[in-house]
Length: 392
Image 1 (cartoon, rainbow, N blue to C red):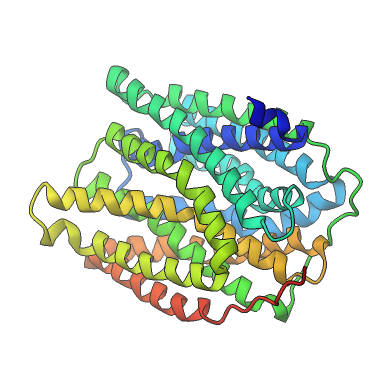
Image 2: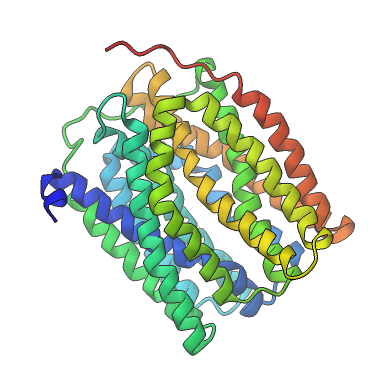
């Protein structure tokens, strides 16, 4: 408690908001594949197609953010985002009983989720001291993981006791989103800052755009097809997926702040290149671990890949710290992050459809072999990152 007392009120509100976001996201990520399979009986091809509407708001986020930045600062955008996500989550659990409503409320949830992606990093940077941006964003990531632990632990227990009560899971997620909205609304930092520029597209930021596209690849491997291998190929139930996510979130409480420090220490070039190498290993495990290893070791290997991939998701903050170090003006950060999200979702919208087709016609192994090849190319892109030397 004494540590919390030393924090500024805005930082306390931001940590609380991030914790509630982690809770809502944890519920969504740990249940969504099982929800689609159990409630809507989707196959792998349909699972890939559902990513198109889910990622559509991310593809449009540059235009959405440009419009919102005219009307409000980042913390108000975050408030609106969490209200949208809360409405989407509640309706998915209660009224989305056919494919049309499923798509509609997936879009509503996703719209809020992607607005948060655009503004959570810039808000965190405003509450970080120079040279310790990775640490601050890592601390926020730890708070997100703590929320995920509490929520997915609850999902695991409720699934054990009551079965797949998805309406209850998504009701809890909606409440967490609305609590996050209240916390963001109370933040005062940046109230008097000049408005961000609405659209930024510069040659200087080419590497940032490229690593944003690479993140779109790894995100789809984890969110769509990594979990789908466990659920569809190996019949892993919702409580086990929730337990795996719980383990990843627990480790992330300690690993995310540590990874933030590693980014400050080693730099974005080394960290992001190492991330691509680890992603190659994860893809190869998803592709061959289930077949080459005996049971139950093969499942343990797949579980380990799922947990490691979840933890390494934290390294997305390296994109934001890299951008902050090369940005010509702080007002360019939020619109450039939005541009990066649009680029990453151009990949994220097309890859699942292609991957679903490949899965159905050639086998799931080829989905991950293609992803491993893309990660190999990404390794060489990340080696081109250069950060100007910072002066004291």
